[in-house]
Each structure stands twice: as C-alpha cells, then as structure tokens.
Image 1 (cartoon, each protein chain N blue to C red):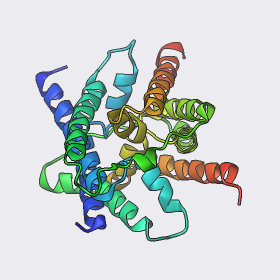
Image 2 (cartoon, chains in turn brown, orange; image 1 turned 135 degrees about the horizontal axis):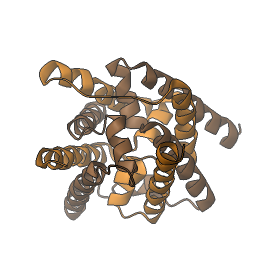
Image 3 (tube, each protein chain N blue to C red; image 1 turned 90 degrees about the horizontal axis):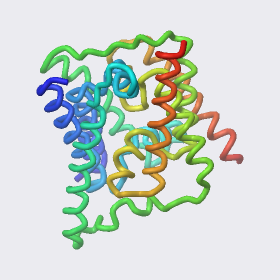
Length: 139
Length: 138
C-alpha cells in the first residue's frame, strides 16, 4: 500500500478514536487527571482499549514473521541512554498537560474545530519544538 | 460513569490501537503524534510526506465527524496565557522526553518498553500533581 495512504488512514482512525472516546475534550482529560476531585476514569479505559488492541495486533504481525516488516519499528525504539532527559522531559510535558488538558493529538485536532485556544497552544508548542532543536541539536 | 461512557472509552481506545497498528504494519513507524509533528518542522524531505498525510488525516477527522455524525464537545476553560505556557512545556517536554501520550503512553507501553513505562508514570504523576495544585490549592 502507498505509504501516504496508510499514514492518512492511520491519522484519520486515530482522530476518530479520540472523538469517540471524548479524549479530544480537554475538560474530560482533566477530570481524569483530577484524581482527588470528581474522578472520571475514562482515560484509563481508553488506554486499556488501545494497549490491548495494539498489543494483540502487534503479536499477530510478529507471529506471521514472514512479513517483511517483522522487525516492527524496533529500530525506531532503540533504547537511548540518558534517563535524566526522559524524566525531565516527561515531567515538563506532564505539567503542560495538567495545566491545559491538551496533549499534541487533541491540540492539533482543535485546529480544525475553530478554537482559538488550540491555535495559541499549537503555536507555543511549535516554539517548544524549535527551542529543543536549538538547544539540543547544535549544527 | 455511565455504561455508555465505558463503551465509548473502550471503543475509542480500540480505534486508537488500530490506528497505531496500521502505521506500524504498513509504514513500520510508531504512531507518536509529537514525533510525527516535530519531524515536519525540519527541512522538507522524502520522509515528510507520510508525516503530513498522517497529520492531515488526524486534523480532518473532526470536521468529517461533524459532517457525517454530529456535534463534538470540546471545552477549553484554561486562560490563554496559561495555554501558551502549557504549549511551550508540552512542545519542549515531549521532545526532550522522546514522546507523548501516544508515543510513550500507547506505542511504547504496548511494546512493554521500560523507558516508555517510566515516561508514562512520570507524566501521569506530574500532570496529576499539577491539576491538584491548580484545582485544590489555589
């Protein structure tokens, strides 16, 4: 299959999943993160559904190991040492996620929903990407 | 939590898992949205095409749903100044940490990657603490 078509299909399906599960809605995400408030555990169920599905399909793909893609994305997942970056980066991401209820997927989907807040968030998120490239990939 | 919410949460999760499996099977790529998006701000190359195709599919899903199915509820109650700071933290943080809720939270955890498990626990905890401080301390 054409790689662009499969990537498009994947993005579209991902988006539909975020809509169906309501994870596109930051208020819904925040009510999961607010464990000591009126806790809504939807996000945990979404993750469970996604992990079980992907885990099972991954196992199927690997089982039919004749498939040329059997090395499944492992090359993209080579463990990089430097756990402090992993912890610091994930901590900062968590703070931003907790402040807004937005992570990159739902934020990008907000762009086609006409929400000004999404544009602000995406603009500064792109600045964050550029800042990272500036600081960590010196030419 | 109603029965319907349980069904839509699990159903949506299954779609997300399916989406990640499609990208893994056909493109041999992880459906880490921050990584896919960040690859697009670099100079254009062959690799940029599928990234753009993925993002277009993702972004178009919402208007398509509105056209064919119905309304989508999205509420952003966070002040714009806070959103600006949050975006910056998310953008820099996901790059430094090597993934977000999709890359680490779904793809990495489905492979049982220790780094992804650590990353997921870390951002869940800091996000939870942040929400606690914002909602219950101030």
